[in-house]
Length: 153
Image 1 (cartoon, rainbow, N blue to C red):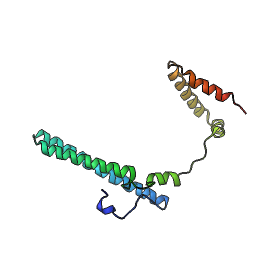
Image 2 (cartoon, helix red, strand yellow; image 1 turned 120 degrees about the vertical axis):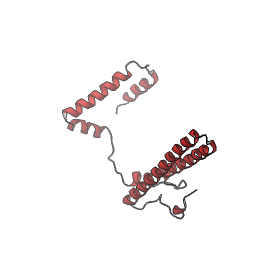
Image 3 (cartoon, helix red, strand yellow; image 1 turned 45 degrees about the vertical axis):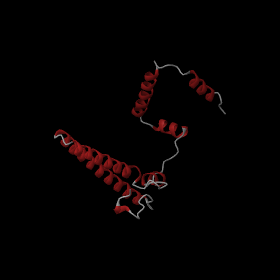
Image 4 (cartoon, one colour; image 1 turned 180 degrees about the vertical axis):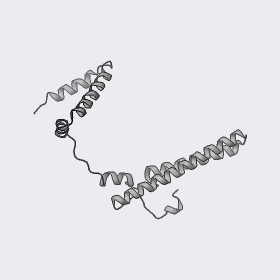
């Protein structure tokens, strides 16, 4: 159930990038607050179980589960599960712009890279190649890969 202080509010539809960041910050603060409450309930449950107070320990564990569910609700969708897009999705799709990454972009970066960067990249590729050296050979995958290179324009 939606907490009383959020009734009538739809924080999942920010109008600006800064509004989305504010909503994300509020989501994180609320989520971490409930997470800390859950931790406190588990500590209480331990104390109750050590004292042989098992009904109280179970109650504390139930409260911890409730707080973890609230924490997840805030972190995942800012407590608006019916919203088409939450603040995180809205921010990533409306506020972050990235250039297309294709082979031309990769080659351009490689040609303008410092020698140390190229050495690091080649080292990563060699380490990856070495890690798959003793793995079983997937003939279907590599045959499909080879067929793809046979279709040069």
